[in-house]
Figure (cartoon, rainbow, N blue to C red):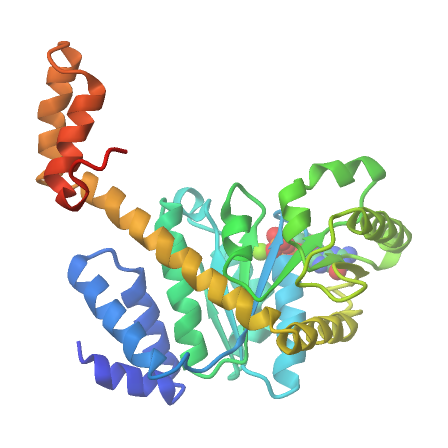
Length: 333
Ligand SMILES: Nc1nc2c(ncn2[C@@H]2O[C@H](COP(=O)(O)OP(=O)(O)O)[C@@H](O)[C@H]2O)c(=O)[nH]1
Ligand SMILES: [Mg+2]
């Protein structure tokens, strides 16, 4: 594969090249990994490269994520912005994903020339998903997308992962009774920048308004974060179906982003994320090498000797580390 040619096509905004590059970063093959890394490096250029606004969006199935993305995305492209949508769905490995349902819900957006939608591929390891998604974000930015929406279902650690790769994190919730409030994990509440109570229409409108007030109250009780101006995090009502409140929500997102840029929080957060992902890559790399030869075989052989009591576990581990991480020989653990 000609990396230089692919990079030039991505920078020219060619969607097919972008799609191909995302397929490349999704691959687990060693030669593909090397090409993907070279591509990311090339696109980054001398500085940080082109920058888009990375918006993470989380919510349980049925809350209206796809409907929201369609309406919100169409509003943004209507304002002349280019919008990319990436999905992170940890369940897609099993279920085949909700791609079919999403394609029909995002029908208009998927036909929009200024939008790019990439469904979540099947992959079981969250570490792999994280890297792939981060690189896909970088590719979309290089292709000139202004807004990158990263969607995830509220399952397991995927929310935290998406929050850690976004500039803004939105939590989409449905109108509900008061006891529902406790259903949202504290950690997720704490990483939300804006909570959107969707389905604020028809019979559900009054409930949505009440739910919104409940969450606004809950947010005020959280510890003040350095990355927030007064009034944030914030809870708002929207109706993705009736396309109501979307412009107001976008203005809040821009106000928050603008403040963070001026306060240096935007760049600081990205820098911290880059550091975080670098460390994660090192950890992942070490762990994957443990699963490969020759370490794997050496561990197997030692494990048998540990089982029979011939050698104590700590000594056996020390032997592995000394042999395969010789830089740390004698340093202990
Ligand atoms: N009343 C109402 N229904 C909505 C709204 N947004 C989504 N829905 C409905 O909720 C259901 C789930 O929506 P979907 O976008 O697929 O949710 P997702 O699973 O989070 O992607 C669908 O039947 C939508 O029509 C809304 O703003 N108001
Ligand atoms: Mg959906």
